[in-house]
Amino acid sequence: MARNVSHSHLEINGLVSVDQKLALAKRCGHEGVVAGAKAAVLATFASAVPTLASVRMLPWARAHLNPTAQALIISTVAGSAYFIVADKTVLATARRNSFKDYTNTQA
Image (cartoon, rainbow, N blue to C red):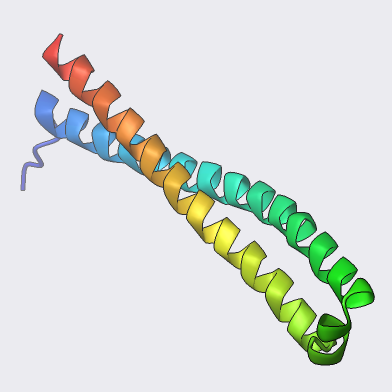
C-alpha cells in the first residue's frame, strides 16, 4: 500500500492553470456585471426624463401612457442596456485574456 505522492510537473501546472482560468472567468463576469449596472443606471435616467416629460406635455401620451406603461418603458430600456453592455464586456474581456494567454505560450 505504498502511496505515490510525487506529482508530475504537468499535473501540478494543470491544477494551477484550472484555478487561474476559474479566477479569470470570475473576474470577467464581475467586470461585466459592473459595466452592465453602470449602463442600466445611465439608461434609466436617459429614458425616464423624456418619458415623464412627454406624459406631462403631450396630450396623446397623457391619455395613453398610464404609470404602468411608463414603468415598463423605462425598465425595458434599463434591462436591455444592462444585458447588452454586460455581454459585450464579458466577451471583450475574455477575448483580450485569450489573446494574452496565446501570446504568452508562443514566446
